[in-house]
Length: 495
Image (tube, rainbow, N blue to C red; front, side, top):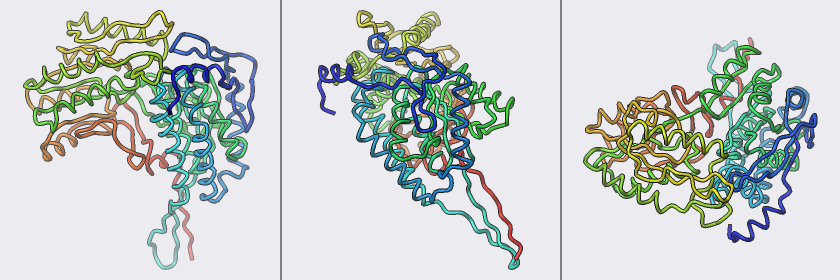
């Protein structure tokens, strides 16, 4: 993407932003209620968007139900479903610039990251599952000579997908693409903070030739639209990414309705362990800084707890602090910006509450810790680093979901593993060491769904992603994601 700041500002004013739900293959205004989508870059209203209540969710689920029970989608040859997903991926690529610009406007991500990372991930996900759709094989177990057994994977039905605002299209694609590839139909509810890019994808899915009702997108808040999806008896599977607290609500909704399967990718307080024998301490420190400040720290996998051996702690912390102070924070539409705005003013205030708590608990503030650029009307925060953080403190234990790093030190490897596992979460972890045996042993000992060794946030669609403990269940990405959206059926034929 080579547009200048001025060109992007001009294009932002010209964007045709959606304002309606996309249900049964067409835009729907619903009952007339609406809500404002506010840009965190300047506090200005981007659009007034139709607000989904129970009636709109009912309409979307009914459309998805019809499309599954009597429509062509589940009955298409898998290769045909795959071709439709590939056409959608092509349309996402065609509209990549506008989608990236919309994401930066609605949630504050720097435009370079929206274009090069978020859209790359979303487009790649639809392509990957489009190519995978006809590569899956059923099973024919060995039986006695007078019988034939078949084990087939069949789509589960209607999928409700509820996704957050921090990666509006990446996380949506991780749910939607495998569900569609499996032959399910989907009702997608994006966050009310960032619904615009998802509504655009709903339109593009219809343009790509997905039959009416196969992908429906409704905009609304969690307590109303999200709850309605969670309780709806017409929804067979609910896939959610978001906070652990809200994940508990969806489990209750399932228990109170039709016992729908609920798959959860929840919060994290990920440890990043740096040992003295790290291959390159400067690279380890640089990656630690990048990991916590990327996407404004608004990531469930963010390495928000940096665990450093006492012998190298000060050297590592100084390097992280230097990078934090040098990071360019500013307008997400400026191509030179390295860290954009937090998603909402209310979220900035929440993060600042954690900063104040850290100071009250006696942690040492080494960098940042104060809002900036208030004159813009946006919600900006300097990259923040604390050291001398006590393991039992709220700063060390609670998910902040912002650009705030907590540094803890340890004396030996056993202490490092104990500190790393001393959390209710288990989404991800990092480890820096030159010793292959240490890498294997510690990776096995860490209770996390993903462990990165001598890197962080690396991987591709071939590997699964998800958490343990209160970070959730089930897996996104890879072939394993299809397990969430398919049922095994046994057919026994007596010959």
